[in-house]
Length: 142
Image (cartoon, rainbow, N blue to C red; front, side):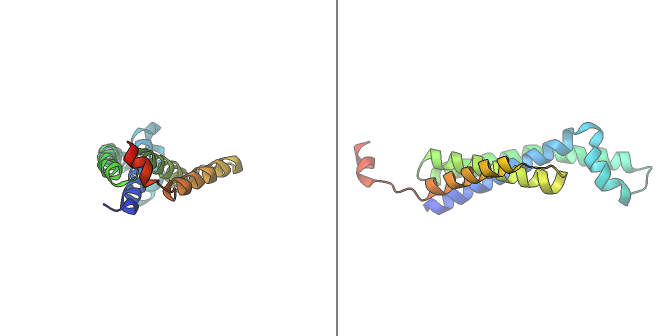
């Protein structure tokens, strides 16, 4: 497997982990406030609680499915990356970024300038790790 493919799988695993966070928030949020806000304007008032409950149960199931897909992708990423550190950092970094973006765009959360600075450092670290040069001689010594 090419090294870039492993990195891409690690980023995809991070995306799935972020989706698990979204589904967790939707499933366990008190009284399903976000789902009520999204759903109730489009359904009859009498069925809204049932629809919200069904969506919360669906979110709970999707939470586990997205975690299962995340782990499957992460294991493949570990096999395809140059090192386990590269896979772990790419997974964690992309999870961090995607979770923030979902929070902003789906839940209206705000993120400070300090957070963006820190996130930029995480992305910079990902770039450095992704483009790091491996010394074939050091591999032979192991």
